[in-house]
Image (cartoon, rainbow, N blue to C red; front, side):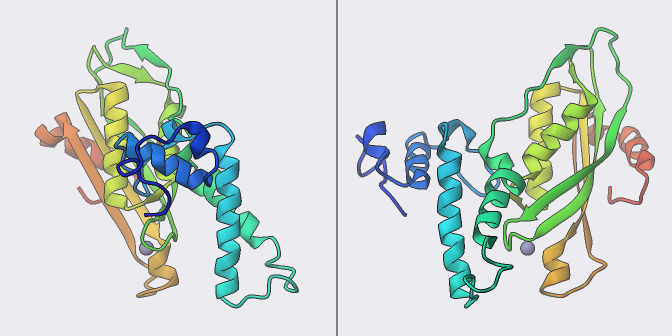
Length: 245
Ligand SMILES: [Zn+2]
């Protein structure tokens, strides 16, 4: 493991940690708090102000090393001169941003009208990356919610924000839909929750089998959608395209 381990050196203060690279400092806090930091985990609670800029600088320096190892002359090739910097910014601030920023604030409304009808949100555009190759995953998500009188309702745009937050991390599609379901279940507390994600995996197009017709569909059914086949069929029949049920 790079950097100090809180199990073997448990008494480093923030002042001691300040001397370390930001990634080692953050990792020390994560291990100390017994927090998992897999590719699709959010670690925002352990990142202090200004540290994302430090992380970007670290990634940039290491990405420059990758280009060097790929024997690309970034000095005279004007196209790649700033590539390390661009990629670092893209990873930390854009495509993997969902690891580093806190969950979007959800304004919840009590279900005063006691809505208990099936509600479908989607398609929501998904932009993610596979954690095996860091290749793009581009797709769409549909969310079905069956609220009860105790559910909190969140605005339509919030579903998009939560989806974006969960998906902008290196992912495995099957885990991504479960993580999205867990986040929405906790926020909305519906009687039933259904999620269908259909996506193109660019690691299939770009490398490997190069089969451009490969799309993958995953679904998660919870509560009423699991117990009530009629409700599940109704949800699936309202999706615009054929999806696996
Ligand atoms: Zn892949």
